[in-house]
Image 1: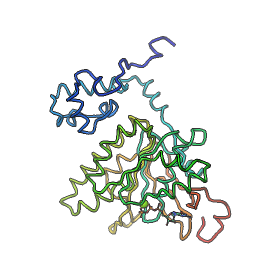
Image 2: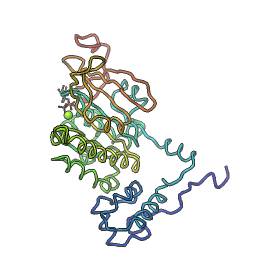
Image 3: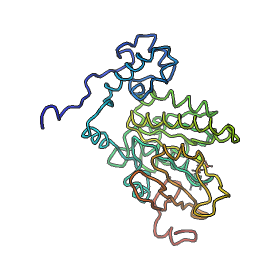
Length: 335
Ligand code: GTP
Ligand code: MG
């Protein structure tokens, strides 16, 4: 391999905002107020997003370009693209069957959406992932922390403790590595994510959860005339999430409710909230439903960039998300 092949096109490394050319203390301050706390987040910004900082378009572009060169995401050769793709890591769900459905687990750098009705297990999976992400790679984890944005006040530390104990982890340490925020409104939810980059970097966050992505939006933006605004905001929110996932090589998970579609005659009569915006930005969508009464749940991979559709069964127990046994399948309601 020649020397040129062996090194990235990236030349300069900037650590903090003030290191970027043309960024003095006051510009840095304004950028932080806009939610850009790290060079990584600026690398993913658009010129328009920096407008409110009161800097010229030209300067904004220069700052973004410098940040991009620093984190290595300007023009890159296909071999580097491949290398970026090779950086994708996988996080275990806790169930081998579910992991198989996802070709090894949830991917970093993309958004995975779990949707389904009340009690289908969306929040339970989120809890489990918060624990699993702290495992070492040989156990399917990412040796990282989790960030949990909770919109319905359903996060329970007690549940984390149960799951951590089952995996032989120190519950005290596990809860310390989950950074929690409750979002009171959709605007608050957006604000939290827009200001999350520093917390993500400082705590080595490798999993970002929004549970639920759509609940606030759905209840605040009612009626046809509000639909366009709602979709625009959701779009912005999702894009912020994907940029964070890419910048920090983290797994991003969102949950979503379903709504009935009475005018549909064929196929599933229910569909996830959020329409095309959520559908197009979620790279992997998983539909969860109850098998019947009891702990069994069915996960269906509905869309993925490269995996085939498929279904697997798992169960929710005291221990968390687990595989079903042959015995479970034989019970009434089993599959
Ligand atoms: P919504 O947020 O209401 O839309 O539902 P969800 O999909 O988030 O449901 P969630 O993940 O909260 O699932 C709740 C279900 O998980 C309960 O009905 C129980 O069946 C199961 N569950 C939750 N905690 C425990 C537990 O500690 N032990 C056991 N065995 N099951 C549990
Ligand atoms: Mg829930």
